[in-house]
Image (cartoon, rainbow, N blue to C red; front, side, top):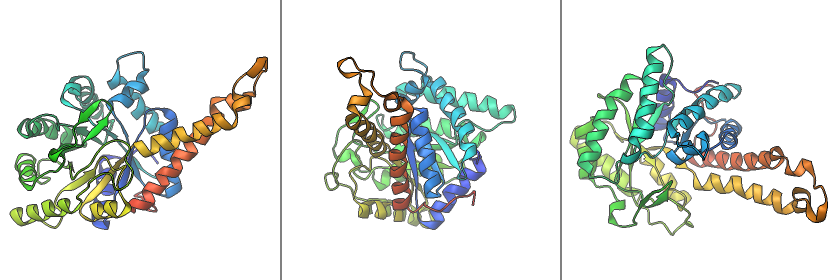
Length: 342
């Protein structure tokens, strides 16, 4: 199926919210990892979200040049073409964009989509994340207020981060401290600035102890009950239906299955997955190299085995391994077997 239209993406998110499940959002940085994400979603029978960060876009463009906006558009165009062969629907998203990357990443992509929409096409991306976690909340929301109407006008959705995700991802680093927990007052300020959908739909990454990186289950001190407290507080204040915010879960590598399930039950409809799929991909490459050592390398003047060092050989193994992790995520989050294409 083609990449999701704005209407299909909205239907995906609505289905997740009403059905109390979440879609995996898989970070990719190459055609191989993108293909692996598509394979995994197809094998799970799940729609999903495929996303690219500033660093991933840099890599798509070619690591020796500085053209992350061009890399992101190359990713989107490639995804649009290859996704047609799969019977699930995927949405495209740009991940963390801090303030210093706005001019070179997010804003050029929005402008490119605006031009494309004026010409009768669809936006390159169905949603974009503005990561204002490193600036004061007032400034974070002021910039979000500027972005929201532009994205709404082209049928794209804004994602904001209210609070701070600890750890490091693509050079965005935060300490692990009390700022990892969003407050109800923070959420109220967000609603006061951005509304509850009437100004345009947005996704909200509330932080409840989340940390980017590699952590064993139990080593990250999550408080998913905080999401319910905030959702209930907003419902009481504004008289909305239950779970008024569309929530995103960042930094989930160290989470237990029970913590993930509780977060989803409290309104998470998108969960970012990067570290785990990176490991699954690279683990299979390492396995291929170590097991086929004598064939991969020309040892002692021999010629090696072309079938083993052909990048397609170990690449297929890596894609299959990563795809299996995507399937696992879809099953865990409840999106397996759920598709607007069905």
